Image 1 (cartoon, rainbow, N blue to C red):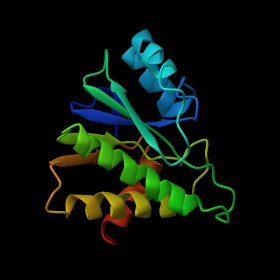
Image 2: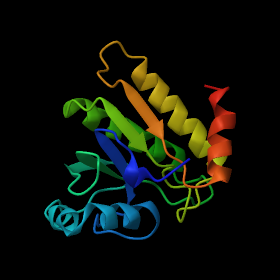
Image 3: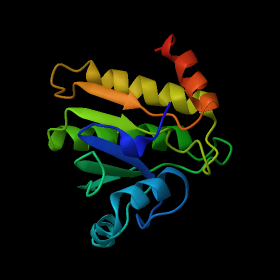
Length: 163
């Protein structure tokens, strides 16, 4: 439980919107902490599709990199939301490998304003991170999930025994 913008890791993941131009929640906090240079770099990326990921420098953050991903808005689970959230984690981890990132911190993607149920979201996050780290080819040494509040933290903790 903590503030993702203060994590001493190589990269943090931003739960962004499709414009990548900042917003509320973790997205707004990351843009504020990184400084105006982050917005300038994001403007050059041309947005990001839901389920995909793009990378920028971290600027004023302790992290060297920010991996931006756009999670799905929960619409009852009938619109491939679980598949899209799975893609978010897979694409972030793939980018981390491409950039030789050894330590990485994720927020709880899509569980805030996008209303993805925390039980399902935490199961997807932990499963995909574990699956990736179990690959012999993975260069990633440490992955944190930084929860903003105690309720989210407790859900992730409860899911740890199921992956």
